[in-house]
Image 1 (cartoon, helix red, strand yellow):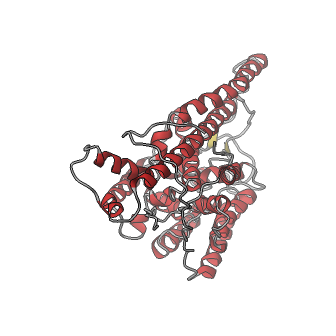
Image 2 (cartoon, one colour; image 1 turned 180 degrees about the vertical axis):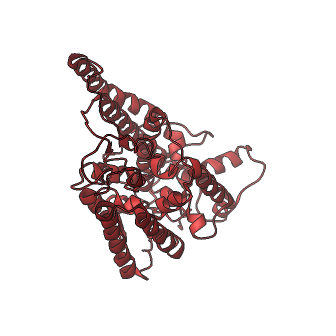
Image 3 (tube, helix red, strand yellow; image 1 turned 120 degrees about the horizontal axis):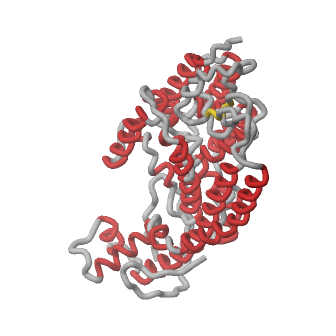
Length: 434
């Protein structure tokens, strides 16, 4: 019997979900997938059948210009590292940024994309039949390797998504640090959702909701064009909103950059405490010197740290509870679940007419019972995944609170190794040039 499949846009759609494979995938980014049950918004019977889904072939990306793309990536990363660490010229960094926007963005239409490659890597781990293309593997790994060596030089001048935002950031204002800390949790949520979506066969949501792909390809759905336009207009005043508050690949770059062997510094030699760089960074990525006198006693700080450490397990458990309540909305990321709910709604008279998807399904040979049975299984999987996603976010929030509570002694103005984009904006403010 022929199986009806609604393919996700640009996504990976495995038909067989294996919990063990999903766990392996999500462990790689500190996210696991786990369990829970709930009812459909529209009541429907549950069926158990012996139906086995046929394998779905996922075509690999085109190999055209593969070698040239890798050469350009290596070259631009190398130049970015030189411009940031050796030349220390904001103008040169910005010109390289414009080149990357033109080549990787408009010429190559935003693909292959290091940001979206996270999904390909997760897909390769979840499904042994999916082969990650070599180019995608290089675009995923190489920026992380450079981040370990030189900081986030990929963000500085190579990433097309960051480049187009850097180009429009003409009147950036600072976001209050407290707001920045809260919003910095969203990339972790997006990363978890993206991997859960891949693991459950719901598609590549990072690519599907890329706000700038419509600009690069000169065409997209109306809603995505509006979304991209809003992000660019917002980017005039809030520098790089996608990079700072959404980018899931930025989470990995942040971790790697914290451990970088070399990193951009505000001054090439000793800081003279002129404070001129204090307001130069629109990303809140410059840490000020700590006051000479500690704001609180060592014992009080240790007590607060101990309390936060004890609260981390509580936050994880709370996250599991919240995640278990999100089974319904999470499951609707999958087209099969959405179709099943639509079909149930039409059969119950909740809709006055059919849509394209339901008409196509009714024209197929697949009975509704099989669609409902598959949807029920998917919802159970998303229920487990919601728990693990909640646990992950709870752990992230706990770790961020601990990081904020630890007062590190600094005598000079220093870039935050994790959040600094190595854009070089602070270079021209520093009077020490040699």
